Length: 379
Figure 1 (tube, rainbow, N blue to C red):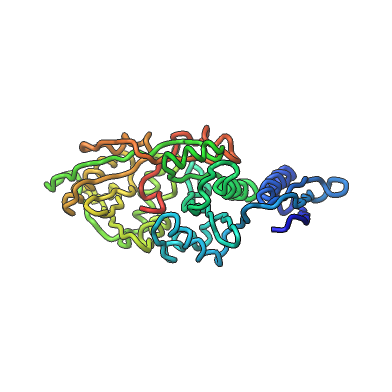
Figure 2: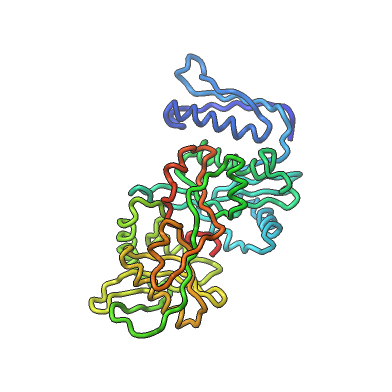
């Protein structure tokens, strides 16, 4: 990139919000510009009653060129995915994650080649009885040749910090972030001051149940497309009422159809559980066969009904001749799932919060997330 030149921005309070918000946006604009070798200052225009002016001058050459993801970057990102994970991602799966306005990403280029990607997909999240926007971080990718420097001089730090500065600083339509990094990735991000740990994921494992007649309930395996929107809305309302102190992705009908009915790769089954006497719905479980195991990915049910859902899922696993039924759940909520001999164990998966631009996020979100396998972008 050129090692000289200057940029001048004017932030108008009418467009950027309050004067305080304009100053905050100016701060993050300066931080973002620093990734490309610019430095500068912000100040009022004229008598101070008008726009806020940000003056930036190029003072250094940047090692990488950072930018927001654009559609023409897709081939380069797909190549980077294969290089990073030794696996292919289809364009359909990429669109399912990031299409229709869901995606946010910062990429880094060296000599024109994409060598890093830090992406996320937008989710609606219920927290403290409110509905807010959150970003689920996924597909954090760094080319093998760029991984040697996991410090604040490395490309991972550049794309991750720029992402947080852009989407939780300059743009502020999202309130929180989460993801599913392993222990090693979490420690690196913590050391760099990007993440703080707010929870861990437990795995609960059951043996399949016998298939004897259940007096209390009847359970039916159906295709996800057969679930009625009214039923889903009712069950989600009951579940959300029981989890008002938690943070969890909204599991309303639109989300269930997007997540499980429209997935371009995996196929899921819905297990509908009803009271045998009244026929009243007790809950729905989302299941998927994975080799010889059955995975309990998600549930929609009042918390008191979870033992019935678990028992029905164990019976379904037996009917599918599966060797085990497994589920992920945020560790503080594992107690709701360990019915019928379920055994909970720690996994290598951590739950992060953004501390680079929100120092209080750990305090606000510690042990609050209700997350299951279905909340991932890869199961």
